[in-house]
Length: 292
Image (cartoon, rainbow, N blue to C red):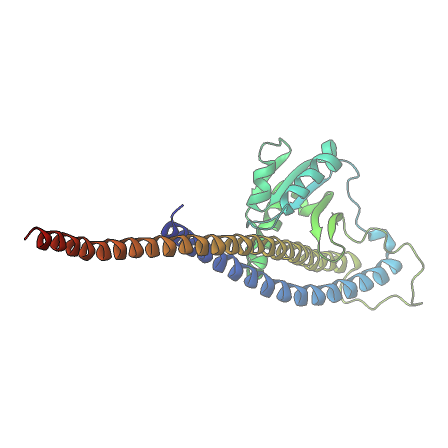
């Protein structure tokens, strides 16, 4: 490769490096924002679970129940690339751990959908959020899709498989029915809470609010994990580009030194030719005088 071609390739690689560094910076900014949102969302969920546990401790008979077999699965993947094996891990987990237990599967995120597009259990692939601000719209799409697959007011068993940013691994949790295991222990307070609604109505509203908050938290957690993987992936890519640029820099220096050496040799040869011409002329003149 000639030096000019090498320099052009270096500039092109440098442009790619700048783009990847910018993508890494954006992922880090998104990561900090999601960490804040997820912290707030956890506090909301803890409060709602405390309320539900106290409520169901006094009204255990209206606790929601769901189907035990053939749960419907929601798999949360990514819509964007450059996040390492984020989606591949989810795909392998689904194939190895869930298998034929799923009554149906809905995939969130086109990149994960590409890995599972040929699986007959996948009934729908939804576009996932690309930035935090797209999560509310994405959540509405999920709810509408679940209402289509699970008629009669989302009655049934739904589980969610996602990458949990808190523990750093894939989690398989129950979304529906909610509040499982709550209300079985004796109430913490001796008197039942004062209600403005019938217990069944209050539970329905509490379930709606809780599922809304829980899905928000799951999407925040998954997207946080995705951006962490993206930062790691881009850091490795930028480092490899830096190593390559350093190799190209050394190679360009060597080629430049070779060019300089060649230029010096040409100058020296030209100087030798210019010096030998006057000497030959003087020798010719001297011979001419001798003949006279």
